[in-house]
Length: 239
Figure 1 (spheres, one colour):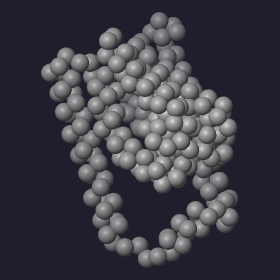
Figure 2 (tube, one colour):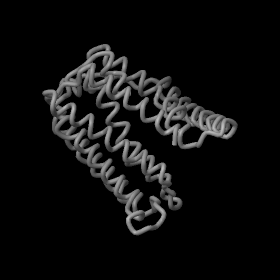
Figure 3 (spheres, helix red, strand yellow):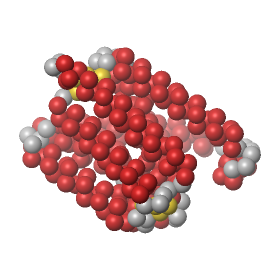
Figure 4 (tube, one colour):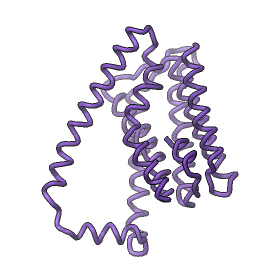
């Protein structure tokens, strides 16, 4: 998603995202990698258990606390917050609530249909499910995020585009992943370990690009990210 946005239009990285969100995403990626790989070091099967899930949820709570505190602190002087406040003073319309209530089950139903049919495709073609997850499901579930980020990038709203990508990844790692591990241990295969390490390396690459390019992400860096993803998926298909 980020590679597509940057390829279409290079943009500057807001200092706050560079100073806090990107390093935090890199740190969280390292923590997840260690949690998923720790048992392999002693020759046991890897998994994310309930304890790992609680650690990630606690990190999510800390992240939300820091961000909410920062928003409240910057509220009076932040132009975007003043604009949001002025809009929030308008009377809440019933149709907004209706759209939210309609959209929640719609997202769930779309996810169920996507996963179910992707698994059927994998079984019929003899393709490992993990590879379908890396390609079909990953693209399908990222389409809303892709549309939002690309639209923001084309309008010159770089912070919104990058913040959308970083925030989505943080939520996936700190909320979605631990929620799935809370009912019981979530097995982590060797293939999953490879994917987790790949995600860590791509996160480090984005952080490196932003630091070494004077807080800018250029189009050639976006191309590198896109080509890197395609090469990685192609390589995984050959394993």
